Length: 257
Ligand code: NAD
Image (tube, rainbow, N blue to C red):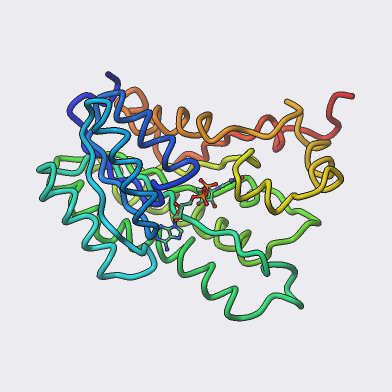
């Protein structure tokens, strides 16, 4: 019960990392406000949690829209009385996101609006709620691509995640004396449907796997576990951190045979 009596709002909780975090954290005692744009997926997660005796509710929220971001925070407070943990997890990887020359402006704008502005809006409305609760923990999902360049480019995605990382550091410093901790999570490549659809040949998979010391893609559950530590009071002295969970990618020059 590492999140006993906590209320957590998770964006993009209908799938992948967000879904795994919702299920894991609910089992650790948190009430979960599930926010997503995919109503069926979000509601299914709520049913799974409540079916197992946990507390959860769904709110439709597009994180790139200010009114929706405000609404998801309000929903968490109305439903569960307060907000302790904000997991700004929702993000997209557009299939037409490529290098600077070929990437359309519309792809850049959409990616920035969801991945970067979405985190800003979550904080804009979430921080006042955390203050009302006497403090709390914010976890913003960046990526290992905020730390390393890749010759398999997704220029808008990479730039958006770099923005999340820089913004997180500053938020952490600004709010450090308000008992509000803000950390960035940098997952490595995961064996999620999203990425595996993108890496749809063995050759494409191997092009990445050779750079991962642990020798495999990560699991969404492994990221949810790392985020659980940041959400809980166990990480009470951790703020402004770049919390890398990447199978060793960012530590490696030459990987094992
Ligand atoms: P996913 O596609 O499995 O889940 C993302 C969820 O976000 C979906 O349920 C989707 O409906 C929702 N969503 C999309 N746009 C939204 C919006 N505008 N408002 C609210 N919800 C929205 O993705 P995932 O792999 O679990 O990724 C979660 C986060 O982790 C993202 O920020 C992603 O960039 C990051 N990340 C993923 C990987 C990876 O390899 N999968 C690696 C590093 C970082």
